[in-house]
Image (cartoon, rainbow, N blue to C red; front, side, top):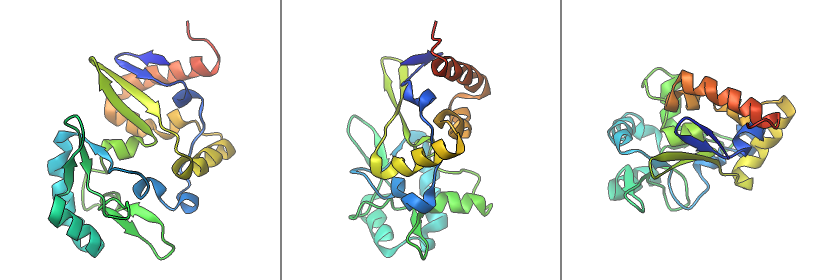
Length: 194
């Protein structure tokens, strides 16, 4: 573990190589898991607005799940998560002809229809955040079926997870924090954590 300001991070965030390879994993992070992506309370109104915007692009099952449960459901310990349909797909999943799952919100963002790219937890994936006693913990949650192709691609391209998630980390903590984080990652990779 290493610390950057108020955030404690697992060392594998600094040492692991990772670059998304959606053509191999088929967007598994949007369809695999036992719960929907975690969201912050402040993101809920934006998600509800986004759902209204992309609703007609989503599957009938997704629209039915939202009609029944809402866009977001309450999870354990006063947490919130995006609703999923029975087969595990996030309600915001769009699939192309090859069966690759992508995020309808992010697709709308790329088309210039919405200024918000996606929930922060999705932007940071495969890193997950938890708050404990005023500190935030960041952990690389390696799940073979969602992460192995990204690790292979990162090794092939020489891209570290800390670099791949640069925009997401800056979105969460700001540029100053990210600069300090990158210096800390270099120290971890060089075995110098004094």
